[in-house]
Length: 376
Image (cartoon, rainbow, N blue to C red; front, top):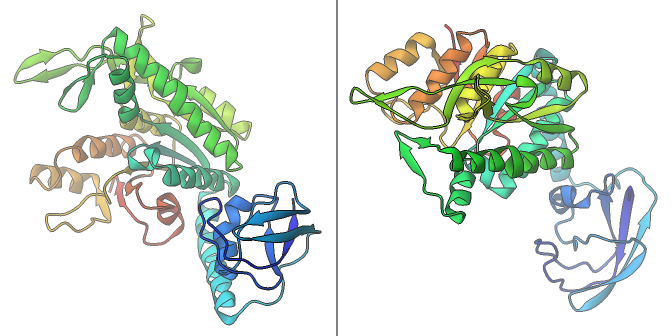
């Protein structure tokens, strides 16, 4: 359905597909690209705020909208009508300027590997998850090689509750017995992984979902933990012992974006639940990634006054941890970042996944958006 649609008629239109329509008292043209009208509604509304935004399936038919009939027909593709206002022109000039400002970063990172740990609010919010998928597809389109490693704690907890399997945590780590492990693998490597893959593919990317068990990607060892001087058994909770990145390289050579569920296996073939942050850091180190991006539900590392710290060296991270500036759940995330950069990753970034397009703002702007961690 390339081309534009001409609408004749007028009405006080009702809401359509979640959008509040206005009044159209004379013909209007709505531009469509590749027939994906849903993706372009915002752009169309910006230039035709009073138009009724209708999805025509099939084209060339008369549709009922609100209290009157609308005649709509599909026309061959052509350029945008030359009736843009000064405001419209300024908008497009700003868009063009943004693209040219991003060009040096596209050139710098073309062919580089970026490992993205995907989790938190960005993964459970439908709008943010759709934006994330489009941004991942865009990164691959401009030559960056993204590798997505995802979590799924809330979804696992929900499924365990539905199956009446008790969840128990020790210092934020889920105690995972054999019954819980079956659910963990089913949710992580099944429903969550495939929904992320589907979203990226729908956005125009080419993604394939795998787990750490595929092609021996993640060899795990049982996590050893002590509390108050005593050993604590977390069950089938593991940590990366060895990473075999050959499957990632094979997928990259085929132009495919790997989407990885952090489930690994031990020497005896036992399946282990691996923390997604830890898995992402280990994978980033193993493939020599340029960046490890950690999407979280906080802006980044905050100082004692609550202001964002834009950049930290390994030594500064340890100093902030020692004086109590860094505490709680931020400590293991920064430990993952430190491990990654000390293993060869150029830099790691903790950024706010609740901000739409946070990855693009971090990668393609000079100031970034999160906290950049380097070896120093």
